[in-house]
Amino acid sequence: MELNVSDLSRAVVVHPDVMRGTEARSPQARLEEAVGLAAAIDLEVAAALIAPVHRPTPSTFLGAGKVEEIRELLEGAEPRPGLVIVDHSLTPVQHRNLEKAWNAKVLDRTALILEIFGARARSAEGRLQVDLAHLSYQRSRLVRSWTHLERQRGGAGFLGGPGERQIEADRRALANKIDRIKDKLEDVRRTRSLQRAKRKRTPYPVVALVGYTNAGKSTLFNRMTASNTDAKDLLFATLDPTMRAVDLDSGQRVILSDTVGFISDLPTHLVAAFRATLEEVLEADLIIHVRDISHPDAEAQRQDVIGVLGALGVSADDERPFVEALNKIDLLSPEEQTRLAVSGRLSQEMTHPNIDEPARIAISALTGAGVGELERLIDRLTTADRSAYIVEISASDGAARAWLHATGTVESERELGDVARLSVRLSDKSKGQFAKAFPSARFANPEEALRWRA
Image 1 (spheres, rainbow, N blue to C red):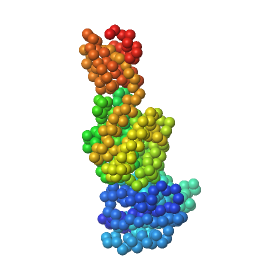
Image 2 (image 1 turned 90 degrees about the vertical axis):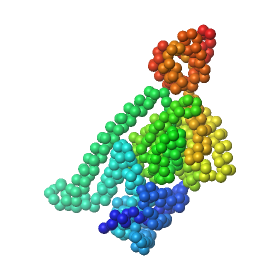
Image 3 (image 1 turned 180 degrees about the vertical axis):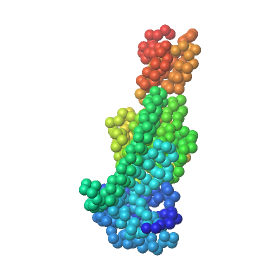
Image 4 (image 1 turned 120 degrees about the vertical axis):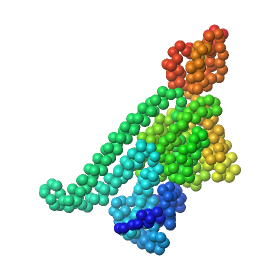
């Protein structure tokens, strides 16, 4: 099949509406998401349609009538689109038969997401992860699509025929490439582990932003950090994790992490390939789920994100606090904004918000509405484990005093001759770090301090 490169810039998007009865989203919403995925790699969508599928056809997935209808649509378009995106997983046989029937290149949902990831990855780690996902996808299809050749007989005894030799060679070549990439990613994983261990030695809490793709995570990240990471109205605008320090109004410093967006029906080998990146979530002290609350499928998107987090090991038993930032309230009516604000304030009264019962807060990352309240909530949740202490240090020890101000909450301080006495709130972790760094410091809780000299 010969195709001009220019043909591939125009696409027809097809969402097969499989009648399963459990789908939380409407077919139209799923189609719009597929069109958004196509736009993410600058494709011109010539047509988009829903194809009802009562029972998938083994040879083409779609029914014969719908296959013919799409062929006529392609033939009647000017210029003729050279690409058809089928928003569902296809077997190699279905993929090959559809390309033959339509005389066009076909991408299923997995292949389309892989194309986007390939176009978006910027870091060396991101490119390695994309390569691994691509090769894993190719290997699964190679094994299935060549099995008919394995039945050929010929050659000398156990060697089999030429088809068998070819597929074995291709399998070995892919397996070798995959092993090399996995070795490189293991080096990256070790480096990340060292970086995380180093961060654990610092007193600053890590706050991870997670959410469905295009929910506004990067826009919120930019507003809170005053940085300029890639924040576009595109699916998967962010693939590589970004971390920045944020100084809250109280003086508390946190490390904010922006992560890859989630999506429904994310292929399992893509989750596996990006696990090193997603492990940042597992190491965070606080998780913020950024939701596009204006989206008609906001609840279904929430369930998708919770499903991926659950696969990563985040559950209701997790001791870390969990917050839902209900983003894009600027697109809602004033009445709806008020309702969300009231219900959010009630949820924030919980002592231990978790993934099942999170603390919620209504915000607009674009306009800044509610972001100040979110920062105060982050401050409260990341310092909830702090205890009150009275600390005595040398009045001339500026480094110890600066450390306490940067790390804890200093409520009062005064100098008594050559001794400085500070009333400060510290977590157990920070207290241990301070005691190790400044062994001459003297600690007591406020009750014990009453026995100290006045």
